[in-house]
Image (cartoon, rainbow, N blue to C red; front, top):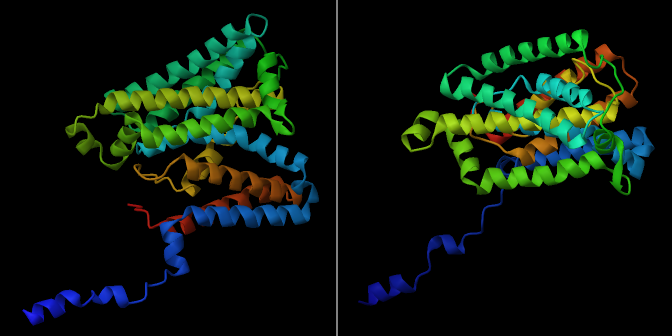
Length: 339
């Protein structure tokens, strides 16, 4: 009995041992978003030292102005990639939708926007049906749709309606693209910010969001678990089409012009922002919060290369190398699966 009492009175050995300190590597592995934050701070400081206007309100405005369209395109890509897919049609959807909106510039703005977003919705639903119902590979499906959309835009500009380079932009689109609502903060950022909050919340707190992660992790198990995979994929690509439309409208407002390929330069950076932000190309891992950091990093990186006055060719080479390096480092630190 005394032995039992003694055993009960003896505290567990682990309670007297000092808590093991986490190494820096382990901390970064548990919180990989810290890596993105550090990269962002370093890039911002370097760019600011080379161009002091970066530390001014005008400098912050320019970054937000450039980041907003990319952030919206990357939001569309995040949704698709979380399911294990990809949407290569986002920029062509954006171009066609912006063209359609401009063709209705003389009519009601609400009507013009409805037609533009209707285009994005139709394209997204068609992508979703092809991928979710007919099991077409997402890359093949969206590339094919992208080619069709490019052809439709070019034909439209040659046979009627407005021409490429037209300045016939909806007033509300021009305002959202280049106007300001609160001080130096561009209106486009005030569209992007609440959208970002809603997307982050929706992915984590709604049934659809959880279904998206489940499908990306294991579509077969999701189907067996009662998730209606085709409907979820249709919803995902429909949202991608709507987001692509919004991105295209914002960019046409910023650039004050329309063209069949005006947003094409956003396609690969949007994918890069998603990957750098920690979303696995295989699906099921990541989120839009990391994508936002990826967007800001890429925007700062582009601004830094412009500040250094590098040629376009060299800027693309350096940009690509740095993006690949950042993506590789992030994957290594976060311990994501890659196969």
